[in-house]
Image (cartoon, rainbow, N blue to C red; front, side):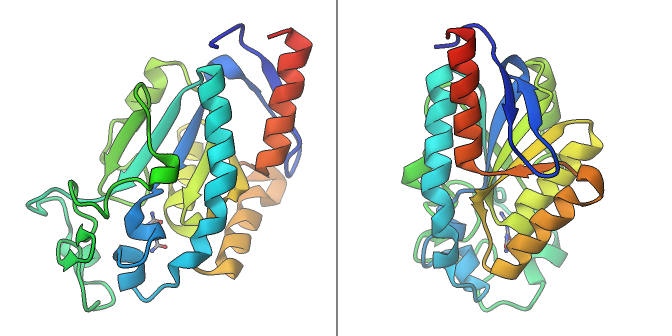
Length: 234
Ligand code: TIU
């Protein structure tokens, strides 16, 4: 709809997250088959990937809401160049895994751009007009043009979803916070292979008055946006 911008106040920890829709973007971090589906990179590290699935449906609802309003969406994908020239040996060899990044798996080469496993899951697949950002690291700002993209459209507030909570979501949120962005993580739209790490990461985020940012839920955000839209007559 791309109508008049609305002012949203979403219930959140440690206090309401307020933003002007003209300056907000949705981040969907690394919802890739390699992390969420069997046979991918996440499973090659010994993880039970089914633990991430609960984040998909709430994220789909939030994504639909951003699309309905015409608000910007950025999808990220962790992965490496075909020739692995951007893959540090430290990342390739850490943990001495049986399958390494770039090796062949059931969904093609693990965490390598162009392979089926590297792509985004069908449930949350990007549509035309949405940004797809490839990143070699855990944080989405490291070695990417994300900051330029956000500044070019005057984005100051980020709603963050994705996997995994304490790895790529947390790294991205911390990088964003240090760059002056106001960040809201939606707890039910993120997931970890370790439920206790999921909770700890969220707790660390909001402690000390919101030292890194805010945490809320998909329902709380959707309700707040609906309320704001009604009030503005959008
Ligand atoms: N292993 C794990 O929890 N996560 C990653 O390797 N990457 C992301 O979080 N995307």
